[in-house]
Length: 148
Image 1 (tube, one colour):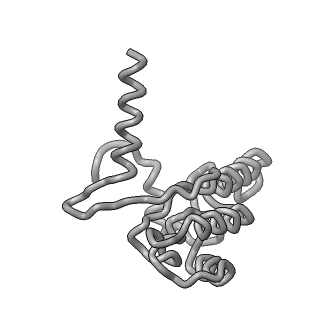
Image 2: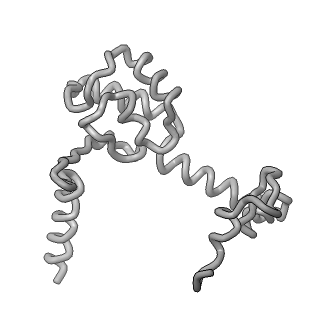
């Protein structure tokens, strides 16, 4: 019983590493260290870095410039360049660490019952937007059943 669970997890890892969708093969390179996961290797470095939570266009461009490598495909990076990329990314707050920090901050706001915390708890916009006619997406997420 336990052996089959381990086998399924190994199969899931293999499928995720080498996923084929409608004839397009997607491969990922794990950047490791709990830094946010994987980046696709069939894209250039500056665009592949944007797949990590917390890295946008500006920060990705800054990282590539700071690395001193040209903007080449991720699959063409050497092991030394990947190692320096991991070292550079460890300086930033990205990935799961960033998600946990934001979740903790929102939880603190909800806990002290400030205006922004109450708006978060009620699933309403908390930055002053009007809700009489707009904010449909934020307001209707709490309806669970039925259609109009």
